[in-house]
Length: 302
Image (cartoon, rainbow, N blue to C red):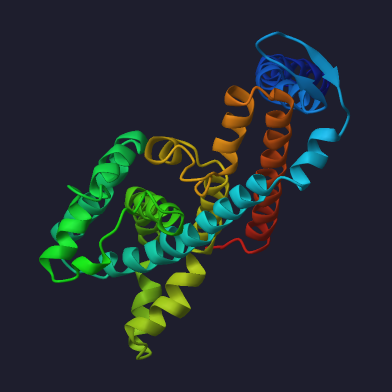
């Protein structure tokens, strides 16, 4: 084919590729970026969504956020949720996946993966309702189990006290999501060439040192991805709190998502809710950008 013909076709091919990309960009712009811009505009209003009245207040909603104790306690609950989730669903799941993948029997490995994954197949709403009855103070499974082993004095109203309610919700969410994280780490460990483990065994490296010096470094991309997903998910918690406590008692289990909902649709302060949504977006975007930067710098090359 003549060189001149190739150069004539190149602009046409670029234009054809652009024609395929433009519809996707338009959809992303309309359904993702435009709502983000609109939400920031809403956050500058005092807006009664029932009467439709709007009043421009500038950054007043953000100033209210700074002085709102419920907002800060909600942020603290999200932060606690993120820390516990990283400990269990990232580092704990990695350790469990390494233990499962170290079993020689393929049948046992498959069986354990299925057992650990089962809770993840249950929706958060159903899991929340299930644990609501587990934590029930009179008929709940947890207090009865404590009675059965002679620890009945520790039984209490787990969801009815501010000191224990948030921890009880977090415990339920870890049970529900732990198996999924374990399965993802198991897949990452399976991708590590067996020759590397073989060489480490020949050098006399024990299982703990193999885990620390071989497994952990070679799954760091998955670890980075799981940390990003876990932290972002921790700041988007909503279903489990609404199902189990609705933010109570006395706002002790409010998270940013539930406080946003209550501010907008219960207290009828939609502009303030939009300000909370903007803060949520900035937090999750910052976490995602930071984690992507770290992961890109520490990419594993085979």
